[in-house]
Length: 415
Image (tube, rainbow, N blue to C red; front, side, top):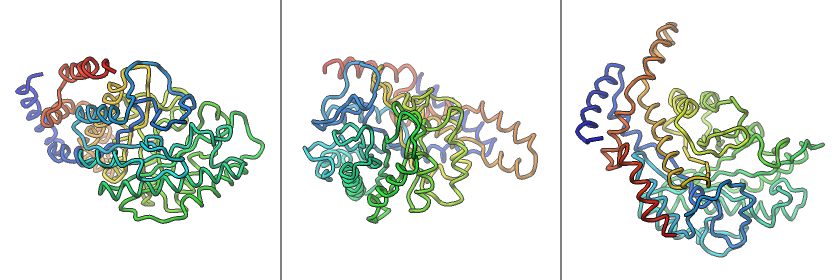
């Protein structure tokens, strides 16, 4: 699409939105200010750079070629992907991406010195996830809930180390680091004593979170899950468990859009949590049947999540990250597609005439609320999006897909 056409259509869209009381320039500024954290693990199928990682535990499907093999290749792919999105960004690291040989339970900030230097050069914040998987100290899939005290103590030490590292990342970059704790612990069949495992988990978490950190550098969150492969009947760290634990211990809660019952949307949860001032980490993935980690597409679920976050007044205070991995297709295309879709949904929410909808509702005019909400669906968000890309020097339309193909031919295929 020609630049002149994009500019002309944006000016027209600007006037259309103005009629609905929406300032497109203000929305575009917020699009840059609200950061989406790109997850590093899409680039290499969560293999990381530890010598003893058991990659098969991660259940990443597909064998598309050209995965990043080194930290530098991974960082180069991330830079390419971030350069295709007009929004604000951070990068989310997993523990297995440290670059120095260290015992996992003794890992420290030194393992991430190259990531810190790179982040500073690119003016990026760094979030962090501990890697409670793919290790010889996993006890039949259990970590913090293992009946074996030596196993639990190992993972408690590791949990403490993850928080120290995240606090260091926050201090080094000058941006708050969200440290998210997720463990896969659960059982394939129904346990006879669910309380036993959850009591062990509470005891372990109490030890992990005993130390207090400056919240300007570190924000702790905990992430529940419904079930997974090999944990179809029981997951110790369920949403109910973690929500209660987080509320009691002044921690944040992670809402992953693929970790709930089919048909259950996390969009409703923002307004349920907002009155209590709880910190929220939003992990955007796409749940398909049992699998929660498909590449994010632009659909009703995604747009409703962003829109409800805005309506609940938390869109500018929550922490947004992506969490999916697909090795069956080009990894950089998967990365860029999901990131751009999340940004598009964010822009769509920012451009919604929310004030008009809320006024109609508070006036008791539900008929007008319905009419306005339906009209809002046809507002020209695409024209504003194309303008955002053009303004940031990002290719639009066919030029964007051509850039993806060029990167595969010029960079990926040489690996």
